[in-house]
Amino acid sequence: MKRVFCFFFLLFSCTTTILAQNVRSSLLWEISGNGLAHPSYLFGTFHIMCKGDFSVSGVLENKLKSTGQFYGEIDLDDPNLQTKMMMKMMMQGKTLQSLMTESDYQDMSTKFQSITGMSMAMLNNFKPFVPLSLLTIKTVNCVEQVQPETELVKMAKENHLSIHGLETADDQIEVIDKEPLDSQIKELKQIVSGFDSVKNVMSRLLAVYKLRNIDTLYSFMKSTGASEDFETELLDKRNKKWIPVIQKAIAEKPTFFAVGAGHLGGPEGVIGLLRKQGYKLTPLMF
Image (cartoon, rainbow, N blue to C red; front, side, top):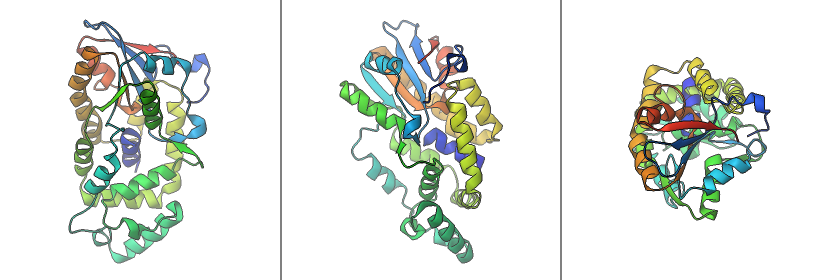
């Protein structure tokens, strides 16, 4: 359950005191050195938050405005993105109901509808990832929710920055599909049956994120018990694929990158990998 929860955090700010933000670590980093004429910036996001928990500081806004292009994990400005993703999420020759016993399906349907307000029958032809995503959204307990990346994209467009993605929708679907359907079904059952516990973990994770310290965040994620395979497939491999894309972008023009904060920390995180390539990564207070 914890592994699935962390997955959505990776895939899917509050006021703090200066002492709460360790100057040796941050969610906002400057990329410089290694022959760059101008710095670029890397920001770690939380994929879904209550509107009241999200704000863009003057420092963050100014750093974004000082660049010439914006990169998210994928191109969120693609008008066909949602359609593409939903089409890729359709199962061929299988349904959610066919992947469970009838009693399990009926029990799941009842609990799922009580949590989301949506009938599982509407999602019967989709991979388990889709109902899992809806459940994850419901762990953020507030009326008004916001996706920070989407808000940053809006700001980038208002400032006439070009919008790009470090990977494609197909790349993300490929990662999702590495999890066998029977494992996804098992995790879906666990999320539904232990939903209150999942909400509690989400609340704790958000509290850690608000500290704005990637080292603390990385330690918390490790403590959730994520498997080595999970970390390799969902973090390390993707991080390594992103590095050449990042290098090309920052060589062309100053760039602002916004990715899930879980990708930043650790020896195989984006910050560590860029340092290995000779860049200087400096944490910024914001």
